[in-house]
Amino acid sequence: MDFNMKKLASDAGIFFTRAVQFTEEKFGQAEKTELDAHFENLLARADSTKNWTEKILRQTEVLLQPNPSARVEEFLYEKLDRKVPSRVTNGELLAQYMSEAANELGPETPYGKTLIKVGETEKRLGAAERDFIHSASINFLTPLRNFLEGDWRTISKERRILQNRRLDLDACKARLKKAKAAEAKAALWSDEVDKAEQELRVAQTEFDRQAEVTRLLLEGISSTHVNHLRCLQEFVESQATYYAQCYRHMLDLQKQLGRFPGTFVGNTEPASSPLSAASLATAAATIPVVPTVAGMPPTETALSLDDVAPPASGTRKARVLYDYEAADSNELALLADELITVYSLPGMDPDWLIGERGNRKGKVPVTYLELLS
Image (cartoon, rainbow, N blue to C red; front, top):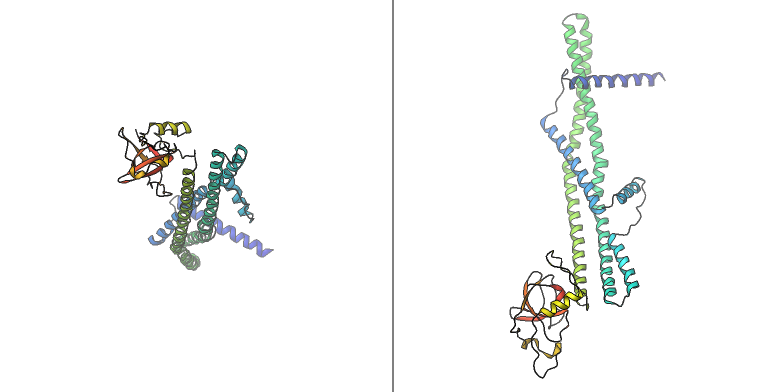
């Protein structure tokens, strides 16, 4: 009991001495031991690393999970050391709604078929998003959290100890200075000087030892940067894989929709109005038509594409909206943003036109084009 009381009294005395030293330093009434420039640079770099790691971590969490309520829920599960329940992605939920809508509105109608196809693609996009979030969480977010909750806490703890050792050292310097000043007035204070010098030597040793420990931890920030660099590269690879999967899924969907009768992809250019069934018919009607060859039925297959020439009444220019891969030799492959010449043949499906580029010609889907006036 007496030992505990003495220890408490000693701790209280040390705390009071440090508080006095700290306060006097703030008011410029006491000297302060300064750290060397290299040490100060290490401290600044460590603080900068911690601050930017926190910002990058928070914003990456927002990128992967925009819903703040879901982020709070995941945080609580993590703190409780429980597995986060599987959550349906927005793409998967959209796919579910489209599938249900198609079943109710008619899965055999053009609209219903398109809803099913788009829903299947959205489901694949949702699965790809889920894989990306999982990969990014494991390979990028977890290492950042481990640094903040592990290495950085250790660094902060040792820095606080170093600060206390520095206050003790400066307090000993102040006591020795006062003892020497008193010694000059009376020889009775010689013992106080010896005691103050002994306390200073002990304080200096403890400060130097703690400074070395803290320095080694701060220099370890370089290793942290190397580790975070590797994690960042893995994050970029995961993101690139995710976007590549999305691109492939959407490209496949565009090709499927291009072959659906009555199905089309709207033009995303703000200057162009969305296409509709009526506008498609109107657009096809304004395309110059090649006259029917005498003696031949007015059908699409009645004319050989090699024998067809542009109509004398003129043609129209069109800009290609998306890449298109020709399904057979009668179709013309397209590249996004190129300009081609288009016109219609008698009896052609209104969803298709004849396109010409240089000395090549073939059928092209209207939905892949922006007709220019």
